[in-house]
Structures are given as structure tokens and as C-alpha cells.
Image (tube, rainbow, N blue to C red; front, side, top):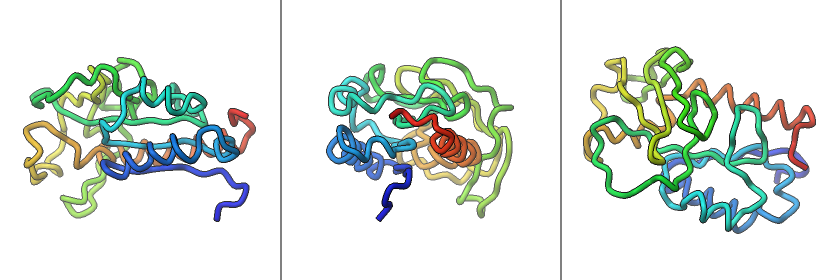
Length: 188
């Protein structure tokens, strides 16, 4: 039980789909909504931005690094990915700039990528990012630590490393959002 404490919802892929279901069926419109720090529902195309806004009108898509009570998602891809659908209505928040717009986040903003493929190696400035057509476009990965990444999802599909590419940025952002919520910047 979390009592009256603030909480973060986080999930990836199928877990992100479950997180969206949790937000839309159990949190929106309830007293839990006031304690939601943020939801990191990453790596899913389970719900468009419009569908989420209709299902959870009191939970906005995050628009900056300290906003609380909001949701974010990104689906990481490279320039050669085979697009299988129009993602222009998908939720995309850039984990380097924490904006939901087409603002470019340079490699220098990447505070640390973590690779379990390379034995839990951590490196800075590995990837850049920009929301394009609902996906998080990574122009290049500047490290060999992902060279053994399986490609069964297709070329430049970085689904398996949606969190790992931006690991330190996500950790620091979660702390910043909790501090904002505790500091009285909660939405209620």
C-alpha cells in the first residue's frame, strides 16, 4: 500500500500498455490522480494521444522536465527503421529535452546510456533524440556497447533499449519530478 504518498507509474512495451490501462481505468478521476507524480509508459503504440486524452482528460502528456501528474511515452527508432504505421498522433516525449514537440536533443544532453548487452556499461552522449511522426528519432548511436543488440525487430528499431539509451536522464528526471511534487507543484 502506498497510503497517501506520491507514486510513479513505469512500464515498458507490454508493461507500458498495462500502465496506460492503469491510468485510464484506475487512476483518472479518482483521488489517486492527485498523488500521481508521473507515468513513464515507454515503448508502446497501444494508444494514440487523442485516445489517451479522451480516456484520461485529467492526465496530460508531460510538456517539461518538472511537470507532475502527467504521462510520457517514446518509441525509439533510427533513421532506417521500416515504419509500419502512421504514428503522427502518438504520444512522444523526448527524454533529453522533456518536451513533447519536435525539439532536438543533442548528444551532449544524453547524461548516460546503460547497456545490459555490454555488461552494464554506462556511457555519456551515446544518442541524440527528436520526436518525429510520433516516434523518437535517434540519428545515430555513438557507442559500440549496443553492437550486439538483436535485430529481430528490424533495422534501427531500438525498442529493446528505449530506457537504456536515456537511463541517467530518466533517473534524474524521476527525482526532479518527485521534488517538484513534494515542493507543492502537484497539479491539485
